[in-house]
Image (tube, rainbow, N blue to C red):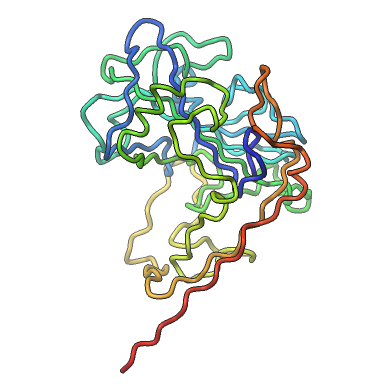
Length: 335
């Protein structure tokens, strides 16, 4: 489901990634762009309980927000507001659910991608701000002294069709499950893989320092229209049914593991999942439905500068999916 501060028009899907350049209070003031080959992961897909010290910054780096109707909640405290939780919300969210990710912004300055994809980076440390968080205005630890841009990622999930009481368990739990077999939400995680062309990120960081979130305010970057972005889709790679039907089990070898012990990998010898990918004649991905959210995507936000230029509320009621892609021809080799 489209995020709040996007436009004009509606995006297909609800993922939005922000690049911030926080101002540290005392040290590590120079913020360097990510290097080619840099990767990192936030969160742990095997995690099944809330086991991070609440006094640490990392405890609020990976959370959920429960939306009520068209109310997005407080904008200054993603992860620490009254409607935020570390695991899946345990109540029905009439406006959907948003995943909040604050990636680590402190780097050891050397390692691009260690085996665990995480030990080369760290969250900042210091006194929490007025919002109770430590992501802005705090310093990097001595072990990771190099400051990186702060990546904040949001994913909005349209859970509204599942708010029927009959679909919710009677024991007080919630019905949602992540595809890796996590019914708790504690295994929520996100990966970052560097993919900027040349020095484009550095050039953008030097000039695009505003906080409006408006692509037009960053002329150093080549922009795509919303229609062009919606038309960019990944073709099916594994020939199996995973959408539009109820599944007896999750794709792959991902049985439900509710914890509280960490989840474990299923031995390959015990896995009968499809392991081959389609290469010769990939199936076309079905046209995604552009879902109209309960809020106006043209919301103006704090201040006087609109966050969605040239956008009018009427566009949220006339959005359609991208044009259909012609299925690829299947070529039969001559014997």
